Image (cartoon, rainbow, N blue to C red):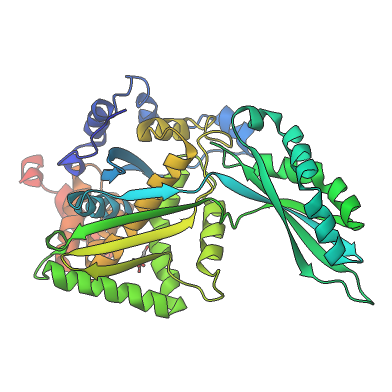
Length: 436
Ligand code: MEV
C-alpha cells in the first residue's frame, strides 16, 4: 500500500489529532487506532496467557517516526521506547536522508541457524565426514519435523559440521552441527529448536557421540540486512555548522568507533535505540536482535561499529549491516494488540521487509546521534526533552508540561526544585495568563 510518511507539524498536534492524521495517512479503519485510546491496549486476560505469574500490564509510550523512505517506499514507523528524543531524532535524520533519495536496503534469505552439540566423539574427523555425507537424509528428517514451514516455502537448506575440540588419542572431542533453516516470515526460534531436537538422535548415531545442547544460534549471520544512505551535505547543516563540517565530524566519529571498542559500544547503542524500539513495537524479540548484533560486531575478534560513515564529494554516505532475526508471524505478533496495530501501520509484507525498515531506523538513529555529537553535543537536545520528564514528575499536566519544560530549558538547569517553582507560579496565575 502507498502511504506518505511526511506529516509536517505532527509533533505540534495533540495525541488525538495525531491519531486522526495517522488514520488518514495509513488508511486504517476507524477501530484500528481506537484501541490506543484505552489506558493500555493489552487486556489483562491476553497478558495472563502471554507469560507466567502475571499481576498486571506495563505500558510504554508508542510514538511514530516520520519521513522514512526506503527502497522508494514510505513507511510510518511505530516505536516503543522510554527514552526521550529517540523518535524525534530518527524522524529528523530520516528527513535528511529522504533528500538524498531515501534509504536503500537488501537482505539475505530468512535463514536461521540451529545448533546440535555432539560430545564424547572418539573420532571427530570421521564423524564430521560421516554426518556431511548424510546431509540429504538429515535435511529430509528436519523438513519432516516442520512440514507446515515447507508448505509455506521454507525449510532446511543445508548443514555444516564444525569441530570445536578435536578428539585426541586420550580424550574424545566435541562437534557442533549447524542446520540452516529458511523460516520465511517467522523469526523462527520455535521452528529451529523443534528441528534441532528432531535430528539430534540421528546425528549422535552418525557421530557415535552423545547429544548435547539443541538450540538456535542468536548469531544469525545468514540472515543479515544491509542498509545504505547518501545525505546531501547541505541537509546536515545546523546552528552555525555548515554541512561539510558536520559531515567531516560524522566521518571522524565513525573512525573513532572503528578504532576504539569503547566508543564502538556507545555508537552501536545509539543504533540499537532505533532498532529495539521498532522491534518492541512490532512484538519482536529485541533481546535476540541485540545478542546477534553485538556478536556480529565482534566477529573479527575486535568489537567494531555496525554502521560506518564516509564523506564522498558532495554527500555523506552511511552503511549498516547486521543480523536481523525478526518475524511478522509467530511469537506475540498476532496476539498482542499493540504489535498487531504496529505491523498494520508499518504495512511490511514480509519479515524481510520488516527487517530492512528496522535497520533503516537504526541507521537514522545513528546519523542523528553523530550529527548532534559532532556539533552542539548531545546534552542540549536531550535536556529540553528531559525537562518534559521533570515537568511531568513534579505534577505538570496538559499545556503546563511544555511551559514548565520551556522555562527549565531556558534556565539551563533541569532540576525538580526549579520545575516545582515554575509550576507553582503557573498554577497561581489566571488561565489567560497561562496561555499568554
Ligand atoms: C544515547 O541513548 C545514545 C548515544 O550515546 C549514541 C552515541 O553516542 O552515538 C547518543
